Image (cartoon, rainbow over all chains, first blue to last red; front, side, top):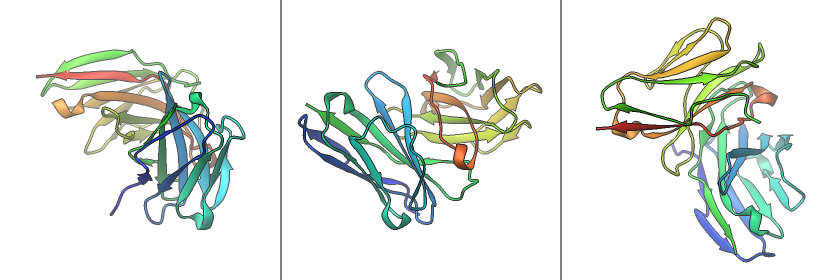
Amino acid sequence: EAGVTQFPSHSVIEKGQTVTLRCDPISGHDNLYWYRRVMGKEIKFLLHFVKESKQDESGMPNNRFLAERTGGTYSTLKVQPAELEDSGVYFCASSQREWSYEQYFGPGTRLTVT
Amino acid sequence: DAKTTQPPSMDCAEGRAANLPCNHSTISGNEYVYWYRQIHSQGPQYIIHGLKNNETNEMASLIITEDRKSSTLILPHATLRDTAVYYCIVSGTGANSKLTFGKGITLSVRP
């Protein structure tokens, strides 16, 4: 069974540009989470999908970030326009059911904004 | 903010047990204690979780005090591959399942 996959693994963009990160959760997993670690800080929660609905988006830093999960399968996280402080590693995680305990994390996307 | 406190680092000898402590004095009755680890720059990896009883799986054991204000993760026979940052996290389930990571504890396993 394939794990959580993320694309791209690394992205370098200029300030002001747009970047879209993709996450493919484990097949059949209803819950999908986005987290990120910016330089020197702890891993922070961004948002939580249950199927295609946003369950909790309390961690989204501002309206430059837009997350979608069409059809309850893969998810995208768009940053528009990107700022220098958005640089970091973006992790996606998934879990099977509403009351699942274990979150499976992907390898992350390293975003560098120059 | 994280609801847990962990020492910043510890080390242990390969083959010996590693006991990683965690304090979570403000844990709520319906919150679980989770342990994850991050090896180098990989994505975090789930290890174990518990509510109030001690738990054991193929990776580790989790000992939770009776008052639930602290816990210990035990890696019974540490190997070099267990060198990682270990995170103790207090969280719920369902709508409250987001993980709040702190700084974690860096475990170094020496040969």
